[in-house]
Image (cartoon, rainbow, N blue to C red):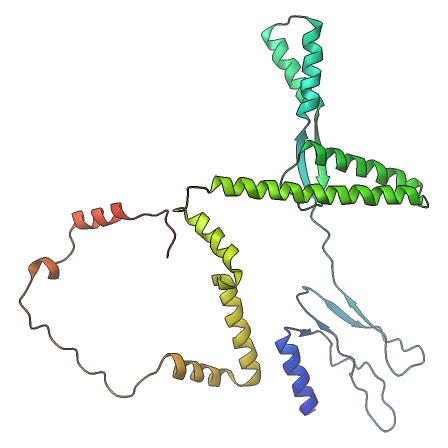
Amino acid sequence: KYNTGKGNRLWQSASELNLTLITDPSLPTRLGTSCCRDSTPDLTFVRNIKKAQWMNLAVDLGSDHCILATTFSVERKKQREFHFTDWDKFRKIRMEREQDGHRQGLKQWVKQIKDDIKSVSSTITTDFPVERMDSRLAHLLEAKQALLNRWKGQRLNRRLWKKIAEVNRSVEEHCHALSRQQWDEICNSVDGQMRNGKTWNMLKHLLNENTTKTNQKHVIARILHKEIGRTKEQQVVQQLVHKYLPIKRGLAPPSRQYQGTPNSGIEGDFNIEEIRRALHDLNGRSAPG
């Protein structure tokens, strides 16, 4: 086994694209002949996939290549539960009870209100990326679930499938409307609170997400990974030291002694009162910069 130019270029391209080779070279994927040995020309790369498994099924179906299989788990969309109370229906029930004119005691009245709230409350599960639930969205999701239950018994009904598609579009449009409403509420909540660090972080992210510390760390890690793949790690360290940490040989020149008049107020140690005053003047809620 030896290195070739094509192999080096393939390894460099895979490193730049953050690809991981999961092929087992000890299991040949191509059968050899009397003139050549068994080889592994079929390579399998994955990216950002955890616990990917590569298998050689050792089945050729009359060919000189074996059938390969790659298995990995796929996560489903996260289901979110919302506890929703239809307050419009609750008010309607209470108005009907008030029209009866039947008077009750305090305990019975409280128990009746609790029972009414429980009767109009429900738990809704959805995979749509929404942060809140309102009455319209709840009704749309219930209508979608009812149509899906009908579609399971009538899978050839095209009109029913078109109706489900229309409900999906309505749900998506309403989710966007809820997101805009939530964004407006966030903007109104931070109005007049520019000294808050949370507000500054949000503004920095909106102005340019590429300037965040997390993104800068990712960029630096990507550059280092690319350079280490081209050259040795020690050479990369030497280049960084030579460029950003110039080290001069020899002893550093001695610092000059202070020749002015002594000042006991500046040269003395900090006392407890000065430290307390400095800590009291700190503004812990302000953002840096």
